[in-house]
Image 1: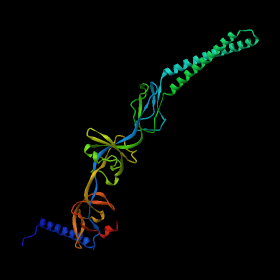
Image 2: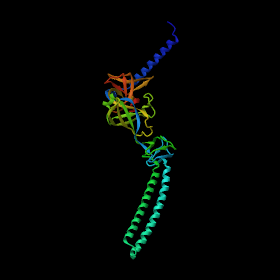
Image 3: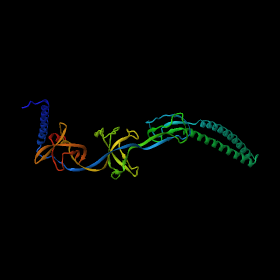
Length: 353
C-alpha cells in the first residue's frame, strides 16, 4: 500500500461529490412513476437579429414667410411644440417705414374725400335750385367716387403691410418635437428659409434587410424589439423585449437591401434615427423543446428525467433559448433529447405549472 497524497484525496472527494449529485438527480427522477410530457419535434419561427432605425412618420419644416432679420428663436433641439405655436420672430424694418407711408397716404386720401364730399353736397343743392348745370353735378359726383376709391386702395395697402408684419411670426406646422434649428437670432433669412425641422406624427421603426431575406419578409409578421440603448444580443435582457408588427414592405430593393416599416407602440422615448436591435422572422426551424419545469439544475449542469420502460433516468441536456410552444413558453433543448422521449416532471416543477 502506498500513502495517498493530497491531490489523490482531492480527486477522490470530487468523485464522491459528483456521484452524490448524480444520485440526488436520479432520486428526484425516480420519484415520479409516469411520464408527464412527450417530446415532439416542432417548427418555430427562425429569428435573425438586425438593426432597426427609429424614424418619425412626418418631418415638417417651419419656414419663414417673410425675409428679414431673425429677432428671436424660442425653441431648441428637443423642444416639444404644438401646432400654431410661435417659435421665432422675423423683423423687416422696411415694413414699419411702409406702414408710416401708408398712414400718410390714407390721411391725404381722406382729406381729398372730405373736400370732394363737400363739393358734391354743394353742387347737389345748387342743382335742386336750378342754379347749376347737370354736367357740373356729374363731374363732382365722379370726383367723389374717385376720392372714395383712393381711400379704399390706401386702406387695403395698409392691411397688406400689417399682414406682412404678422407673417414675421414663424409658427410650428404641427405638434411634435424639434429636431434641428439651423439658424440663430440675428441671422438674416429669406422668405421660405427653414427655421426649424419638427418631427410630427407617430414614430415607427424602419428596417433595412439583406436581399436574401426579402422572400421571407411579409406584412403583418411579428418582430421582437430590443431594449432602448442595447446594441448587443449578449447584453439584451430577454424579459424586456417588446413586440412590433411589420406594416409595410417596400417593393423596391436598393443596394441589395429591402426596406420594411414596423409599427411599435410607445416609441416616443426613443431618439429619432436611434438604432435598436430587432429580431425578424426569416423562416422556420425544427426544434425540440420542453416545459421549463422539466429542467433540473444541479452543480451547474442541467438535467431532465427521461422515462424508459417505467424507469426514470437523469439525462444531461444543454438548454437553448425560449420558444413559444403549443401550451405556452418552452425551453429549446440543443442536445440530449430525441423526438418521442418521455419526460417525468419533478413534483416541485408540477406545482408551478
